[in-house]
Length: 117
Length: 116
Image (tube, rainbow over all chains, first blue to last red; front, side, top):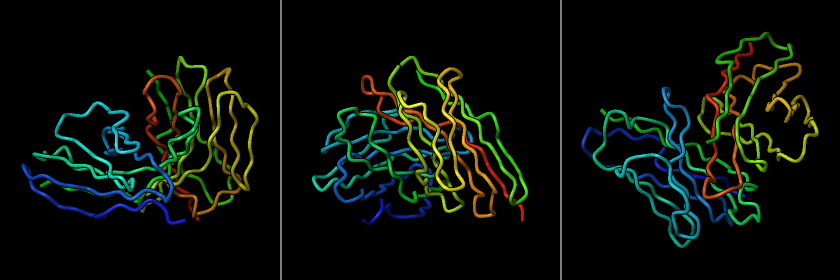
Protein backbone atom coordinates (compact mmCIF):
# COMPACT_ATOMS: atom_id res chain seq x y z
CA UNK A 1 0.00 0.00 0.00
CA UNK A 2 1.13 3.50 -0.67
CA UNK A 3 1.85 5.55 2.40
CA UNK A 4 0.49 8.92 3.44
CA UNK A 5 1.28 11.61 0.91
CA UNK A 6 1.41 15.31 1.52
CA UNK A 7 1.66 18.16 -0.94
CA UNK A 8 3.44 20.41 -1.35
CA UNK A 9 6.56 19.35 0.50
CA UNK A 10 7.91 22.87 0.83
CA UNK A 11 6.16 26.21 0.83
CA UNK A 12 7.29 29.79 1.28
CA UNK A 13 4.72 32.47 2.03
CA UNK A 14 4.70 35.98 3.39
CA UNK A 15 2.88 37.33 6.42
CA UNK A 16 -0.79 37.92 5.85
CA UNK A 17 -1.15 35.39 3.08
CA UNK A 18 -3.12 32.19 3.38
CA UNK A 19 -2.04 28.65 2.58
CA UNK A 20 -3.67 25.30 1.89
CA UNK A 21 -1.93 22.00 2.55
CA UNK A 22 -3.11 18.67 1.25
CA UNK A 23 -2.96 15.14 2.65
CA UNK A 24 -3.91 11.84 1.06
CA UNK A 25 -4.26 9.03 3.61
CA UNK A 26 -3.39 5.40 3.23
CA UNK A 27 -5.98 3.64 1.12
CA UNK A 28 -8.85 2.45 3.32
CA UNK A 29 -8.04 4.81 6.18
CA UNK A 30 -10.87 7.15 7.13
CA UNK A 31 -9.24 9.19 9.86
CA UNK A 32 -6.81 12.01 9.17
CA UNK A 33 -5.04 13.98 11.89
CA UNK A 34 -2.87 17.06 11.54
CA UNK A 35 0.06 18.06 13.74
CA UNK A 36 2.31 21.08 13.84
CA UNK A 37 5.98 20.63 14.70
CA UNK A 38 8.16 23.57 15.74
CA UNK A 39 11.50 23.66 17.56
CA UNK A 40 9.97 25.57 20.44
CA UNK A 41 6.64 23.81 20.95
CA UNK A 42 7.42 20.36 19.60
CA UNK A 43 4.66 18.26 18.12
CA UNK A 44 1.19 19.65 18.74
CA UNK A 45 -2.16 18.29 17.66
CA UNK A 46 -4.22 20.50 15.35
CA UNK A 47 -7.34 18.50 14.48
CA UNK A 48 -8.70 15.15 13.42
CA UNK A 49 -11.22 14.33 10.73
CA UNK A 50 -13.21 11.16 10.30
CA UNK A 51 -15.76 10.57 7.57
CA UNK A 52 -15.73 14.25 6.59
CA UNK A 53 -16.43 15.42 10.16
CA UNK A 54 -14.07 17.13 12.52
CA UNK A 55 -13.91 14.81 15.50
CA UNK A 56 -11.40 16.59 17.65
CA UNK A 57 -9.57 19.90 17.71
CA UNK A 58 -6.42 21.10 19.42
CA UNK A 59 -5.72 24.44 21.01
CA UNK A 60 -5.04 26.55 17.94
CA UNK A 61 -6.63 29.83 16.81
CA UNK A 62 -9.46 29.91 14.32
CA UNK A 63 -7.02 30.85 11.56
CA UNK A 64 -6.28 27.15 11.38
CA UNK A 65 -9.01 25.14 9.73
CA UNK A 66 -9.41 21.95 7.84
CA UNK A 67 -11.75 19.72 5.99
CA UNK A 68 -12.03 16.20 4.71
CA UNK A 69 -13.49 15.01 1.46
CA UNK A 70 -15.56 11.95 0.70
CA UNK A 71 -12.45 10.10 -0.52
CA UNK A 72 -10.83 10.78 2.91
CA UNK A 73 -8.32 13.23 1.48
CA UNK A 74 -7.88 16.19 3.76
CA UNK A 75 -6.80 19.78 3.49
CA UNK A 76 -5.79 22.23 6.12
CA UNK A 77 -5.86 25.97 5.66
CA UNK A 78 -4.08 28.70 7.54
CA UNK A 79 -5.28 32.23 6.95
CA UNK A 80 -3.51 35.49 7.71
CA UNK A 81 -0.15 33.82 8.16
CA UNK A 82 2.14 34.90 10.97
CA UNK A 83 5.87 34.37 11.34
CA UNK A 84 5.17 31.91 14.14
CA UNK A 85 3.26 29.65 11.76
CA UNK A 86 6.56 28.56 10.22
CA UNK A 87 6.67 24.86 10.99
CA UNK A 88 6.60 21.33 9.69
CA UNK A 89 2.98 20.27 9.26
CA UNK A 90 2.47 16.55 9.55
CA UNK A 91 -0.53 14.58 8.51
CA UNK A 92 -1.31 11.13 9.91
CA UNK A 93 -3.87 8.58 8.86
CA UNK A 94 -5.44 5.67 10.66
CA UNK A 95 -8.41 3.41 10.17
CA UNK A 96 -10.31 5.32 12.83
CA UNK A 97 -12.78 2.52 13.29
CA UNK A 98 -11.34 0.62 16.24
CA UNK A 99 -13.76 -0.30 19.02
CA UNK A 100 -11.29 1.25 21.40
CA UNK A 101 -10.70 4.58 19.74
CA UNK A 102 -7.11 4.74 20.73
CA UNK A 103 -6.10 1.49 19.15
CA UNK A 104 -5.59 2.81 15.68
CA UNK A 105 -1.96 3.42 14.94
CA UNK A 106 -1.37 6.73 13.21
CA UNK A 107 0.91 6.58 10.19
CA UNK A 108 2.54 9.81 9.21
CA UNK A 109 3.34 11.46 5.92
CA UNK A 110 6.59 13.25 5.09
CA UNK A 111 5.19 16.62 6.09
CA UNK A 112 4.96 20.05 4.50
CA UNK A 113 7.58 22.52 5.60
CA UNK A 114 6.04 25.98 5.66
CA UNK A 115 8.22 29.05 5.91
CA UNK A 116 6.57 32.41 6.54
CA UNK A 117 8.66 35.47 5.69
CA UNK B 1 -4.39 16.08 31.01
CA UNK B 2 -1.78 13.78 29.62
CA UNK B 3 1.93 14.38 29.63
CA UNK B 4 4.95 12.59 28.19
CA UNK B 5 8.44 13.41 29.36
CA UNK B 6 11.64 12.54 27.56
CA UNK B 7 14.30 13.96 29.81
CA UNK B 8 17.18 13.17 27.47
CA UNK B 9 17.37 15.90 24.88
CA UNK B 10 20.43 14.57 23.10
CA UNK B 11 22.41 11.35 23.31
CA UNK B 12 25.59 10.57 21.46
CA UNK B 13 27.08 7.06 21.29
CA UNK B 14 29.69 5.28 19.27
CA UNK B 15 28.57 2.63 16.84
CA UNK B 16 27.91 -0.81 18.38
CA UNK B 17 27.19 0.63 21.80
CA UNK B 18 23.82 -0.05 23.41
CA UNK B 19 21.64 2.95 24.17
CA UNK B 20 18.43 3.42 26.15
CA UNK B 21 15.97 6.21 25.54
CA UNK B 22 13.78 7.07 28.51
CA UNK B 23 10.09 7.91 28.46
CA UNK B 24 7.89 8.75 31.44
CA UNK B 25 4.20 9.41 31.02
CA UNK B 26 1.33 10.80 33.08
CA UNK B 27 -2.33 10.05 32.67
CA UNK B 28 -5.31 9.46 34.93
CA UNK B 29 -6.83 7.02 32.49
CA UNK B 30 -6.43 3.34 33.06
CA UNK B 31 -6.76 2.51 29.39
CA UNK B 32 -4.19 4.02 27.08
CA UNK B 33 -1.66 3.24 24.37
CA UNK B 34 1.99 4.16 24.21
CA UNK B 35 3.99 4.59 21.04
CA UNK B 36 7.50 5.17 19.83
CA UNK B 37 8.18 6.97 16.58
CA UNK B 38 11.45 7.65 14.79
CA UNK B 39 12.01 10.87 12.87
CA UNK B 40 15.00 10.79 10.51
CA UNK B 41 16.30 14.02 8.95
CA UNK B 42 13.77 13.64 6.13
CA UNK B 43 11.07 14.59 8.62
CA UNK B 44 8.61 11.73 8.34
CA UNK B 45 7.59 10.10 11.62
CA UNK B 46 8.11 6.36 11.35
CA UNK B 47 6.01 4.14 13.60
CA UNK B 48 8.09 1.70 15.67
CA UNK B 49 5.84 0.16 18.31
CA UNK B 50 2.49 0.38 20.10
CA UNK B 51 1.78 -0.93 23.58
CA UNK B 52 -1.51 -0.94 25.48
CA UNK B 53 -1.84 -0.28 29.17
CA UNK B 54 -2.91 -3.83 29.93
CA UNK B 55 0.09 -5.50 28.38
CA UNK B 56 3.29 -5.07 30.35
CA UNK B 57 5.22 -7.69 28.47
CA UNK B 58 8.49 -6.42 27.16
CA UNK B 59 9.00 -6.68 23.45
CA UNK B 60 12.01 -7.29 21.28
CA UNK B 61 12.25 -6.68 17.57
CA UNK B 62 15.68 -7.28 16.17
CA UNK B 63 18.04 -4.77 17.77
CA UNK B 64 15.13 -2.87 19.34
CA UNK B 65 13.54 -3.66 22.68
CA UNK B 66 10.99 -1.92 24.84
CA UNK B 67 10.51 -2.05 28.60
CA UNK B 68 7.05 -1.03 29.81
CA UNK B 69 6.61 -0.60 33.57
CA UNK B 70 3.29 0.72 34.84
CA UNK B 71 4.61 0.95 38.40
CA UNK B 72 6.99 3.70 37.32
CA UNK B 73 4.92 4.98 34.37
CA UNK B 74 7.82 4.37 32.06
CA UNK B 75 8.17 3.00 28.56
CA UNK B 76 11.85 2.88 27.73
CA UNK B 77 13.40 1.99 24.39
CA UNK B 78 16.73 0.26 23.99
CA UNK B 79 18.77 -0.08 20.82
CA UNK B 80 21.34 -2.83 20.99
CA UNK B 81 24.54 -2.59 18.94
CA UNK B 82 23.64 0.82 17.58
CA UNK B 83 24.34 1.73 13.98
CA UNK B 84 24.87 5.04 12.22
CA UNK B 85 21.48 4.60 10.51
CA UNK B 86 19.84 4.74 13.93
CA UNK B 87 20.70 8.43 14.14
CA UNK B 88 17.39 10.27 14.35
CA UNK B 89 15.01 11.96 16.75
CA UNK B 90 12.92 9.50 18.69
CA UNK B 91 9.52 10.41 20.09
CA UNK B 92 7.48 8.69 22.74
CA UNK B 93 3.74 9.33 22.57
CA UNK B 94 0.55 8.54 24.45
CA UNK B 95 -3.09 8.24 23.46
CA UNK B 96 -6.00 7.65 25.82
CA UNK B 97 -9.39 6.13 25.20
CA UNK B 98 -11.77 8.44 27.00
CA UNK B 99 -13.77 11.34 25.64
CA UNK B 100 -12.72 13.03 22.46
CA UNK B 101 -9.06 13.17 23.35
CA UNK B 102 -8.00 10.92 20.55
CA UNK B 103 -4.91 12.87 19.67
CA UNK B 104 -1.37 11.71 20.31
CA UNK B 105 0.46 13.53 23.09
CA UNK B 106 4.14 13.57 22.25
CA UNK B 107 7.23 13.94 24.35
CA UNK B 108 9.80 16.51 23.31
CA UNK B 109 11.95 13.92 21.61
CA UNK B 110 15.48 12.60 22.04
CA UNK B 111 18.07 13.32 19.38
CA UNK B 112 20.22 10.23 19.03
CA UNK B 113 23.54 10.52 17.22
CA UNK B 114 25.48 7.36 16.49
CA UNK B 115 29.08 8.07 15.59
CA UNK B 116 31.05 5.72 13.34
